[in-house]
Length: 148
Image (cartoon, rainbow, N blue to C red):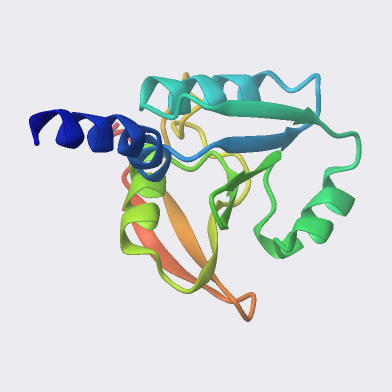
């Protein structure tokens, strides 16, 4: 009985690992350094299966993936069934994957200082947005900037 349980656990581990840390495909301009810093942030947070796809036209790529341009940043990622636009913190992505809302994904429009991959200088407050299926958005998580 113990041997059967161990075999079942052995076969279930890849499935459990996939659920806890899905693969991440990052679409980015090959010369963008902050996108690489964001990918490192994800790796440090436990997202171990990252793939980078070099893209020269992010607007066309974003459109093809289904992320509304109004929420644009410098890179777009596909994580499981969701899109993640810009410098979204790993904690927000983990929450998204846990809660599983019916949405396109998350976005941090622009490139706010202090967001993951944009460290350095004065950190500013920013919001991670939940992008709904109709393209509208609502605040998913607020991130405070540094105090003067």
